[in-house]
Image 1 (cartoon, helix red, strand yellow):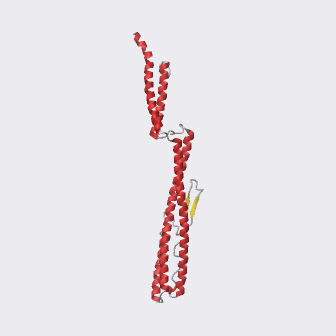
Image 2: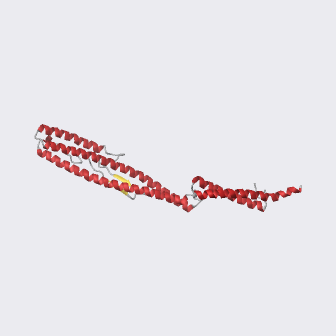
Image 3: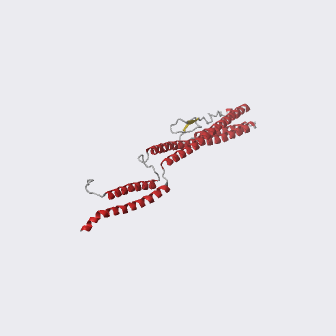
Amino acid sequence: MAVNDISLTAGMRSNLLQLQGTSKLIDRTQERLSTGKQVNSALDNPTNFFAAQAHMNRASDFAVRKDGMAEGIQTVKASDAGITAISALVDAAKGLAEAALGTASTVDRASFATQYATIQAQVTSMASDSGYRGTNLLNSQNLTVNFNEDATASLTVNGFNATATGLSMNNATNSWAGSADITTTQSDLKKASDQLRSQSKTLANNLNIISTRQNFTDNMIGTLQTGADNLTLADMNQEGANMLMLQTRQNLGTTALSLSSQAAQSVLRLF
């Protein structure tokens, strides 16, 4: 339909334009009430929209890193559990060596040596079973945990060899027939214990760093999300009041348009 096909009076055209404007405002207010946001697209407010989008993108990147940190913590915990168990086995081996040194019976010493060999095998087995998601810090593997979105901040947790060989738990020479052989084994076991304790402290320190960065990341994600919300969220109380006022304005505009049309209808009285 062409623009000039129908002629309206000046009063009717003015009221119609007012109604159209009110209808657009009602649509905008309804959208804000339904989404909870006053900025839903770049058309609403380009500056706030793209700034909020940047905040949310960065928060999403941090969330991915947070998942990596959580997995890193579990990897370190798995290794620490392995160290604790291996340390208990080493202590048991120390007890066997002490018992062997306390007897002169070669038969008893040979029996203790056999038990020691069993512990050696269990130490190696336990070190091999201490991995998490394919990473085993007790099998000389390393773990890198990234902290920020572009991976410029990270921590590398160095693993070590926690098998019997890696801990220098040598075989019971000559089935501990001689006291010197037992004394040598005791010295090896002490070194193994010292190494396990040192590595446990290192893992604990790394775990503390990763946990601290995880908490920091949680706070950063919350800060970024709040910043994005501050730029885009609508005041629901204000938008509710706006809707009531716009509905009233719409009703008044409809009434005004009806009154304006009465002037045009007066020509009918001539017939």
